[in-house]
Amino acid sequence: MANLYQEGDEVHFIHVIPRLQLAATYGAPPVDFLPYQDPTAYEQLIKTAEDFIAKRALAHVGDILPSPVVHIVKYEIDTDSIGNVVCKKAEELEAAVTVLARHSKSRLQEFFLGSVTNYCVHHCKRPVLVHSS
Image (cartoon, rainbow, N blue to C red; front, side, top):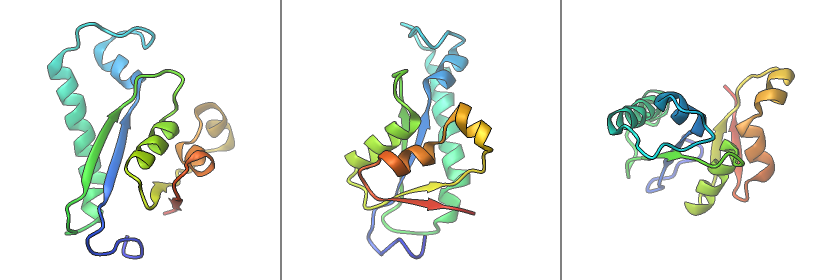
């Protein structure tokens, strides 16, 4: 972070909630949208996502100004990938760089599950930096 951040830069964290997670929360198949969504369950889903970001990301950036902005993005299109959603958000924000973590998956897991990082490296129009821990 110290090598990327300059005083005054805006830092944005993006967390994508996939449609399947929404379906699991509401107990409905992902092919149909529910006309009524339980607001309490939805708020809890958002709170869980915000807690995840606070624990996994915000704790590591320290006291930077302006404070980081957290974006919880719900995507609802079956044909979209999470990587595509991240790339679109990076374009919308005119990000100087999109930083993604590299997760260790076997080639078989990546074949069946895909890789958000791999997708973004090959498809984002904004620069991408892959952080390997």
